[in-house]
Amino acid sequence: MTPVNVAATRVGTRALGPGLRSVVWVQGCPFTCRGCMSPDWIPDHPARLVAPGDLAAELLADQRVTGLTLSGGEPMAQADALADTVELARSRRDVSVLCFTGHRLERLRDHPPHPGVPRLLALVDVLVDGLYVAAHNTGRGLRGSANQRVHRLTGRARDETHDYENGARSAEIALDGPEALLVGVPPAGLLEAFDTAVTTVRNRIAHADPGREP
Image 1 (cartoon, helix red, strand yellow):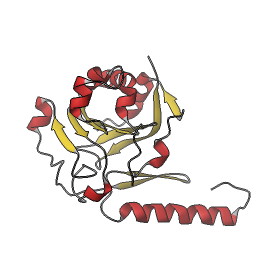
Image 2 (cartoon, one colour):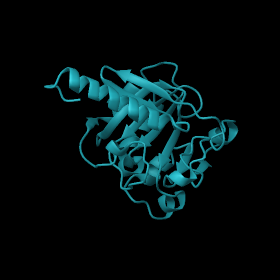
Image 3 (cartoon, one colour):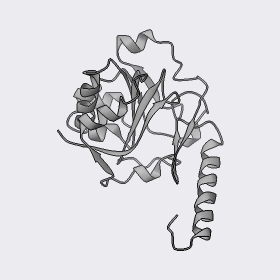
Image 4 (cartoon, one colour):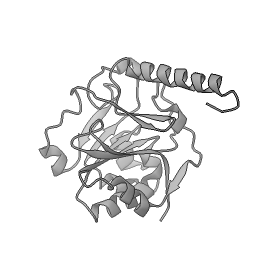
């Protein structure tokens, strides 16, 4: 099986979909949306290569997790490896799957941009599609901007009541030593405040220890 090129993971969050979920953000994206909240994850270079079985086990480490969220980067660029991951996860637990993509659903179905896209798409319960457009960011829902669409692709998704389009946003900041990870679609002003705080901390570290890279 092809490994997943992982930018980051978060096990156990309520900021990216209904219930308690685990998130994998993949490295590499063909789009360069202005105002992207994860510009470091756009370049297509090796980050952390993880076998699908190991990634599935990592994402399910918390027994309370009931769903997986696939983001990035661009998940459809690693469709085969993520499909393997989801299948292995579901062999252990019946998790729902939410996926973000810059591609439109019609493109994914009619002209798959990568091998494995039909296979991954068949495993996704909710798909949020379309490029992020900063001018259309309403500050509501799990869509980054209003031009993006939410597709409930399975019966499981159609039966749930989560408001992906207009619900209140929430976000979490996960700390791992000197590293900070912003989890969620940030409410208005949070991303700028987060970036400012990270820059301030890095500058303080560099000033306190000039020989250490921030």
